[in-house]
Image (tube, rainbow over all chains, first blue to last red; front, side, top):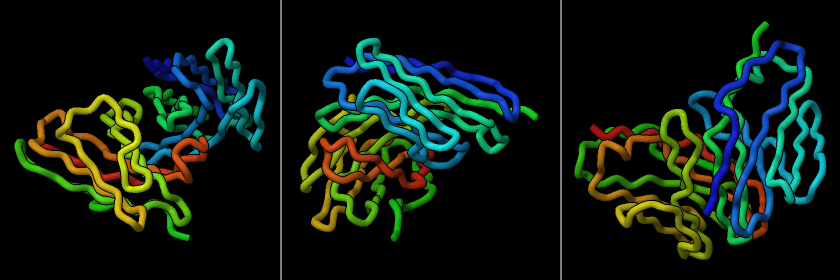
Amino acid sequence: GQNIDQPTEMTATEGAIVQINCTYQTSGFNGLFWYQQHAGEAPTFLSYNVLDGLEEKGRFSSFLSRSKGYSYLLLKELQMKDSASYLCAAYTNAGKSTFGDGTTLTVKP
Amino acid sequence: DAGVTQSPTHLIKTRGQQVTLRCSPKSGHDTVSWYQQALGQGPQFIFQYYEEEERQRGNFPDRFSGHQFPNYSSELNVNALLLGDSALYLCASSFRPTSADIQYFGAGTRLSVL
């Protein structure tokens, strides 16, 4: 079966660093995606990991450990516009994506 | 370069009716996946189309069906609508179904069933 777990809500302060964790149990795992979704809008791609390790893209980084079924998204120098839902999605080699329910991040001044 | 486009934006139907939602993929993409997103939840995979065939299907009843056309655009049909079908329906396109390519999402169709 497929199972994705991530925290429901997180709060952080503008300018700080926040780490959003995601654990997964997926048959035929082929990669882990992170998407950002603002209220009422479509998800937009942030980051993708296939191999173990850290992928860095500007203020956003994502880490994957395949052996542990674990990933995290790291957001640095938080800005108010980073307030959104962050979705973790596991991709299988059959072409299916399973999404978590998302972590709602609130950035406070 | 147009991104993924979906129509209509909003739709109101009553129980028992049928609905058709449409999606045009991003230029250069040949694979279309459909998702249902209820309020406060993540997108739930409905099915994926590639080469005009359904390749993968999530845990959705047969009331949910789809089609892909030669130009790669796709339709999602839902028959015998239930109140619980009220949700945001998202279409995502990518290149090849097994390449783990980035999926680009459309803005979605918000369906309300009364």
